[in-house]
Image (cartoon, rainbow, N blue to C red; front, side):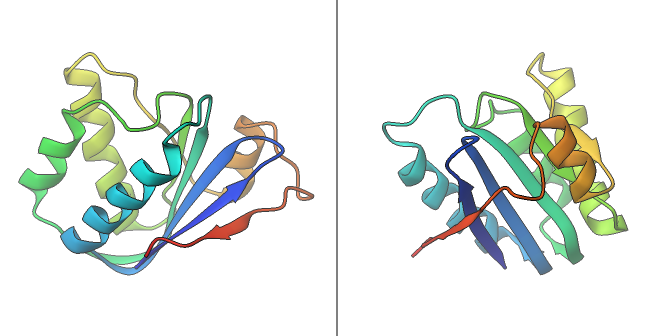
Length: 131
């Protein structure tokens, strides 16, 4: 399951995945992010995969996705403190690097992600309906 959150003051979108991350979750995320980004610019992102228990996405599909430009062109930080999230993040990063695309930064905690995006604990993320 993926939920989306937005911090207006710092223009940061956060996608938080929990449980088993599936191909359907990713497709729902993509549609919601594209709708959200319409008319916005300069959005940075945190992908919090620290709650992912397992991947139900073929490795080939993850690699294929990593070969495409990211929907968010500004800085992207991935929190990957557990094996499944770390595997997903690594495949995306490696494929983007091989394709000559900007790679996401991978960290092991939300605190590290906040620091890289100059956020502090007063940042107020509001939920976004992903329909």
